[in-house]
Image 1 (cartoon, rainbow over the protein chains, first blue to last red):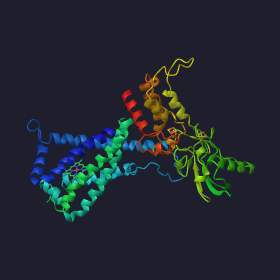
Image 2: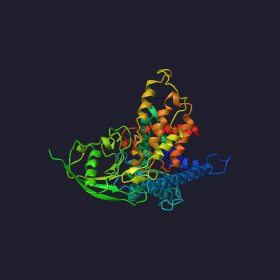
Image 3: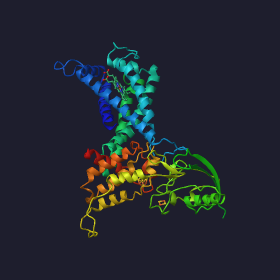
Image 4: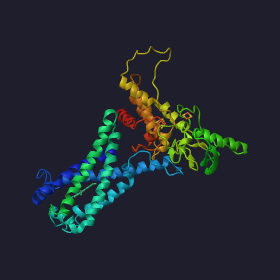
Length: 211
Length: 247
Ligand code: HEM
Ligand code: SF4
Ligand code: FES
């Protein structure tokens, strides 16, 4: 869980940095997208690096889900008889209790997201459009339900990371002694920054700052 | 002063093979100064007089130090009062007319023996796997022969306050025994006497915990919140670190 999660978080950081290039104009963003596809050429064929990233991500997503499913099944086996009284949560951690269904929501979002901006099947600019146009047309004001869906999904991602990041620090044994509080704050801080940075792009398009 | 009238919904199970069910009882004139267990004593005295089987529950010290007592009260292990064992929970935290649900710890590795009594031998086996230090027994060594840093001594002592009650398992949505195991690993792993076996201890205890059928920890923090001794979640990070190093 911790290792595959960390791989995805690293990807998200790179991903958001790439997205923020939208603010430096169409040319810069398209160049960046072009570079992503051709980095390393001619030493390696086109898309080598991108394909490599895609494979690592796919493996991470699958292993992450597999770990989550086996943890859930272990939990069920460890408590065959349920409590009659509704178990009241005593720990204050809303995010903690959204992990399992939150993960499912994120996967559904991911599918839409890939159809939208990677394969462009549900994007108005289509596969032939330049990456920048796909982005701007995808989040055009009249497509506000899409933006709303992205916003909800990203809030879910934020909650997932808030608990997930900190939980990973725990699992890897880093959060002991003095490191406990700073790491807990770092997890919350990084999640918030990531979500806000991701959201800045669709909202900038929505209000017409980026067009 | 007149006492409280309460409705209790109690788990009754004749033995390990019995299916078990919730049974409703009424207890009258409960003093707010009674402990939760004394309130159950009142119920049991009446049940005995009526020729009924009294509700079986574990207890010993009744002063919050032995770890024997423990029940899930209204869905919360040891009740909603923080840092309190069931025996130290007082009836003043309840109101006249309340309905109180009382259930045993629920976990596959803690099978119900009878009513509210569960078999916690799984904890003993985790301790047997490595929760000790190997030293030649004999006369006690002089105090201060091995210096221990004050901070380490304090942290080790805090972890050592775990009474093995099992509330952490009962409260965990995953049925994990990580807090208990981590408390023991932290207690011994912080002291100089615990160093020689530190790695093998962590590995053996974690593997025994998994073999017993406890669930996996997802750091929900429900355990710490109900722990009568406030064992911190940080001990679990320590356990994981020692375990990863041992592997
Ligand atoms: C508002 C937020 C987001 C925006 C605007 C956005 C934008 C994009 C764009 C434009 C692409 C296509 C890049 C290309 O054409 O090469 C992409 C790919 C991708 N995004 Fe996002 N993204 C967002 C959030 C997320 C989140 C939260 C996740 C993960 C949970 C994610 C996971 C992915 C993945 C896995 C790919 C495919 C990468 C690949 O094909 O190599 N994205 N995103
Ligand atoms: S860690 Fe706390 S809740 Fe768990 S057994 Fe020890 S004292 Fe009880
Ligand atoms: S009876 Fe000993 S701790 Fe409650």
